[in-house]
Amino acid sequence: MEEKVKSFTELGVCEDLVEACVRLGWTVPTKIQADSIPHALEGKDIIGLAQTGSGKTGAFALPIIQALLDAKSPQPFFGCVLSPTRELAIQIAEQFEALGASIGLRTAVLVGGVDINQQQIALAKRPHIIVGTPGRLMDHLSNTKGFSLRTLKYLVLDEADRLLNEDFEKALDDILKVIPLERRTYLFSATMTKKVKKLQRACLRNPVKVEAASKYSTVDTLKQEYLFLPSKYKDCYLVYVLMELSGSTMVFTRTCEVANLLALMLRNLGLRAVPINGKMTQAKRLGALNKFKAGECSILTCTDVASRGLDIPSVDMVINYDIPANSKDYIHRVGRTARAGRSGVAISLVNQYELEWFIQIENLIGKKLPKYAAEEEEVLLLLERVTEAKRISQMKMKESGGKKRKGMGDDDGEDIQKYLRKDNKNGNTSKRSKR
Image 1 (cartoon, rainbow, N blue to C red):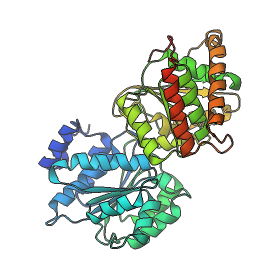
Image 2 (cartoon, rainbow, N blue to C red; image 1 turned 90 degrees about the vertical axis):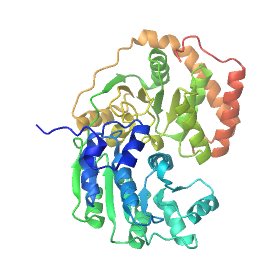
Image 3 (cartoon, one colour; image 1 turned 45 degrees about the horizontal axis):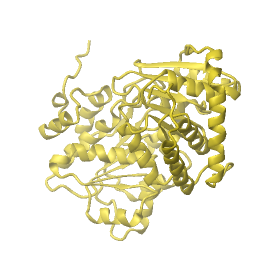
């Protein structure tokens, strides 16, 4: 039987970084870290496949920072990490900064939705590590005077399967053309697709493949259940589950409009909810995320913009209000809870139109999920209150200029916040809420 690695020191991580890990509460390496860090420290390219929430950021950040420490003169633009979402990019940069705090590590985050001039100022300070989304990084490579990645030594593609969709593919190709061929490349993903295999052949040299999980799987500490329900009562079942089970919850929807509407409806029922989606400004998205992380709001209604890589340790439950049409998205959504060995709950609300998608999910994860126990009679006691709360919310969205067919724009998000504050002043609370 293979002996389990007990510490980062045994993996070859230097003393300064081991101390940084301790400060972050990382006492024992996760499986992906234990399997990949020794190869990375030997200078090999890595393909890492691991369940979401398994510590992938540490698996690539530690070897890069150690290589920077080993360099005789620490170079600017030493490493670059590409991410599919702005929030994930910011989170990765925060982990680099935390690990490199005692050695003066400088990072810059290059994502859309943020003032490009501020990013140019950050680049002028010649950071060691750049974390960004492909489109905005390419904008800077094309337009920011004096900026290039000619000295780049490490490239990381995080959530690589998502980076290869049509939104990013051209920008990613363009970036690969202008960065040095002589570099180390780490490719990390929760899922291995044909496109990821193609990318692997294109930009990695004799990589070591590290697989810390089966192809598509969810962690053992995650309790997964479903409710089969009529479409017309879905809101009722959502509220029922939220009132029955306390704790911080992410509610996933298919569209921005529904995420905003549910947040308003839940607030009208006295539940502390805030929305996050791709049609909000970056500042508002981060504001919502920070409120949720800080516990000011216990429910985050969100689209799949929040399903990839976000590490919010306190998430107790994920609810799939809309079942994803792409069953792999289910893996990423439910991976927001039960992270790093903690337990969590995932409940899917399945209506008659979504049954086929749900069966595809069960086939993908290789298990039949049990039903969540709920008596419809008890659920429908909420119907009148929920219907009224939704009606008021729809009216408010229309009043605030909500564009029903197109979803909500940034200005509408601002108006919603005004309404939410007004709701609180009106004392719109529910005694049944356990939050």
